[in-house]
Length: 345
Image (tube, rainbow, N blue to C red; front, side, top):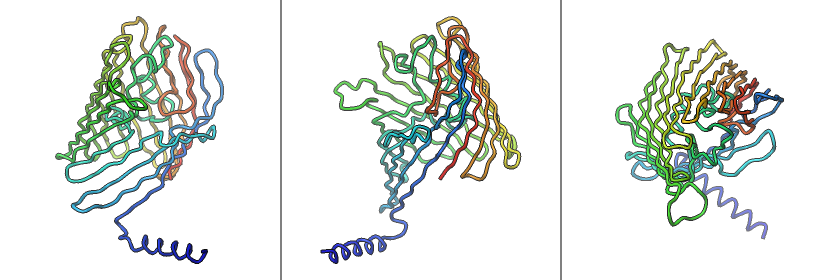
């Protein structure tokens, strides 16, 4: 019996080795991003360790006849700080690519979220722009305000066009952004963008809307861009206007910059959340930092961020891509000093 099993294993290995080298490709990848942070909620402060969008992923693709390619990805969040994780909690999908473009089905970022990711100088760090685009005022949480853009929608069906010149169109439809089956398609959502990108320049406009609570249909228009003034100096900016959300319409806008000096990169950004229908409900966020780069694999960084809140606002400085977040006391300023390490594999 043992001889038979060994023979079957050998036959299977020979079969795999006989497959054309380019027909199947499987990749294991990931990121370990951790930071040690001094966090201040406006009244008290403490020292914390945070795992920030750390991940483990698996990708596979298979070349088909007619120039088609089938592909899949499974990606999960890994809590290096607390020793836990959620399987397939990040972008996980199956898709088909060809001359017609790319189609994906699964759970993944929306086109609106991707625009922010391209221009955010502090993505997944303290001072991430999502501190202003995903939260509200007076103690409200994302669960009850219906003002959550920058999300990863469930049950998504998406199409990405081939390049038309340097333009690309993205469309994402979610019939039901929840778990289980539905008969009424509550929480239906749409997200789309048009982007223009060449070396050293990126500009995009995106629109997103979804069915929210209390008869509201929150929607947002977002414009983002970056431009490399030199090979070392980049400037970026983003503007978002959100409508039909609890508390009233709100605009978020700002600028960022980065400058490379050999193995070091200096970066900073300043963003403003305008007030909504509630008086004294706006905020200003400023963050600056420095990276020490050791190639693509390793980056060490330091960053300091402050979110200055109006009397009725409680925007954070630790939201967006961070697993350890600290709520801000309403009307107080949130502060964070962060020392981080990012290891890509």
